[in-house]
Amino acid sequence: MTALEHIGLPFEYRLIRMMTGEHKSPDYLAINPKGKVPALEVDNEVLTENVAILTYLSRRYPEAGLLPTADDEMTATRQLADLCYCSATLHPIVTRIKRPNFFAETEDARQQVRKLAIEAMRPNFDLIENRLSAGSWWYGEQWSVVDAYIYWVWFRSTDAQFPRDEYANLNDFAERMGEQNAIKKMLARESAAERQLREEGLI
Ligand SMILES: N[C@@H](CCC(=O)N[C@@H](CS)C(=O)NCC(=O)O)C(=O)O
Image (tube, rainbow, N blue to C red):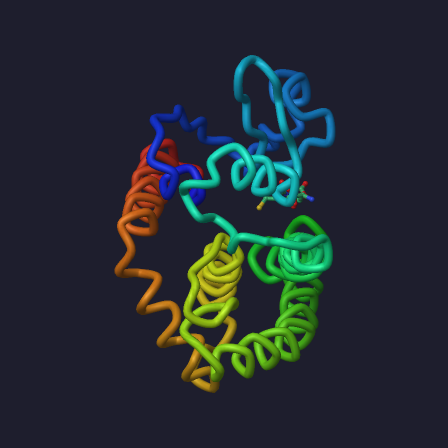
């Protein structure tokens, strides 16, 4: 969503109520048979998987600067690796921190899932904290959609009990991100979605 806000083209956003299992409903499975969010419909075609969606948007809208210009295969492939790191390593840990109920039935077991996921996240935030000591963003002074993904990982984790205090660079980074228009718009959509879910009695 942040990438779309950053590109600045109009788009329609559909709220998927995961707490009611809407992502596994026949309606949603017709869009993404894997039952995962996000899915992006563009020109009557559906794209799934964050890495694919972000790569597509970056290539289709190069003027938006979602990724730094890559002049050689190695640089382009390393950027792909960075997106895969967010999607394949960080994202599943966030899901366990934020939604332990997907993985365990009792309250005790859910607490245990969250605790283990928080421990699994620490070395990753250590790595990112260290990288941010060399510059404002993942790629030094050039913002990219990798930063948007890391920001999502950070705010979802810290909202769900990950202790934020040990990470000065990440806290500063989050503050810088929070000043961006695309992030403000994304957070406004998140708040509206939260209000809607509250009105529906789902949270
Ligand atoms: N590999 C997918 C994973 C996306 C993902 O795990 N999304 C979460 C929501 S943030 C989800 O749909 N969870 C539902 C589930 O795992 O059943 C991607 O990168 O797009």
